[in-house]
Length: 341
Image (cartoon, rainbow, N blue to C red; front, side):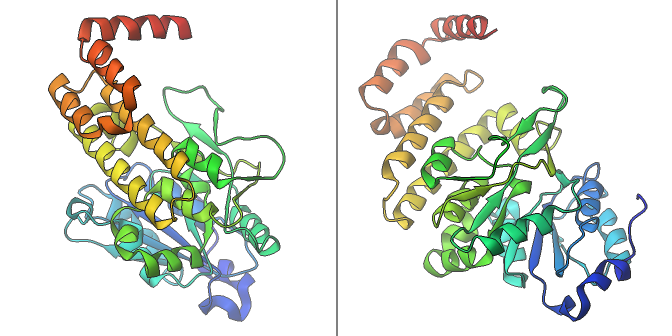
C-alpha cells in the first residue's frame, strides 16, 4: 500500500456534501489479487470538489482479492462500500454491476473500473464531471488508456482519437463493436441506466456489457471524447476475459452467441434506428467465429448453419470453399499473416 491520504483528508474537501455523492464508482472483481490494489488506490487518489462513493463487488474470489478489499475498506469505511459474495454469481448468468452495484448507487454519474484496470490521473473524475456538467446534451464521456500487455509496445494507447475533444457518433461507436472506448475511461449519466432498467430490465440484468454501455450512453448526443490518457487497460493477462475468450473454444462460441443475441435485443430496444450498423456487427462476429481454426470444424459448422442467413451468399461461399477446408483455410491465413508483416 502506497502513501495515500487518510479518509478524513479526502472528504474534508467536500464539506457537507459527503452524504450526497455526485459519482458512484463501480468496481467488479474476481480473483484479481495481483491487480485489485492498483484499482483501489486509483480511486483513492482522486481529488474532487464533490463527494464520490466506491462500490466494490467481489464475486466469491478464491484468492486474496476479497482480503485485500477488506483491508482497504477498513481504512476507508465511509468511502469503500463492498459486497463479498459467498457463491459466484456470474456463473448463474447475472451481470455484476447491474445486479449488485447500480441498485445501491447514489451518484448522478457512474464511473467504471474493473479490478484488473486502474486510474493513474488524480483529476480523472473532476475532469469528466466538469465535461458532463458543461455539456448537458451528452450522456457519456471517455478518454484513452495506456495498454499494459506483454504483446504490445510500451506506451501504446487504446482509444486515442486525436488531441482535441470531439463528439463521436453513436453510429461510429456501434460499428467499432465494443472496442471504441476503454471500460475504465467511461463515465455515464445514471439516468441512462435508470431509463434502460425501466424499459428493458432483463437486458440490463443479463445482457449489459462494455459494448452496450457505449451504445446506450451515446444514443443521446454521442460520446464526448477527451484526449487525456488517465487510465490503464490490462490486456490478455491470466484470468482476463480477453484471454479466456481467445484460449477456450467453447467459451469463445458461448460469448459469440450471447453477443449476437444481445445485439438483436439492443436493436429492438432502440427501435431499429441503427439496424444497418447492428447487422454489420453481427455479420462481423459470425465471420470472426467461423474463421477461428482453434474451434473444431463441426462446432463452427453448427454455428454457421444457425447464423448463415445473416451472411448471405458471400458467407455461404466462404464457409463451403474456405473455412470448412482446414488445409486451404490455414494456407490463406498464413499468406495473410505474411502480407501483414
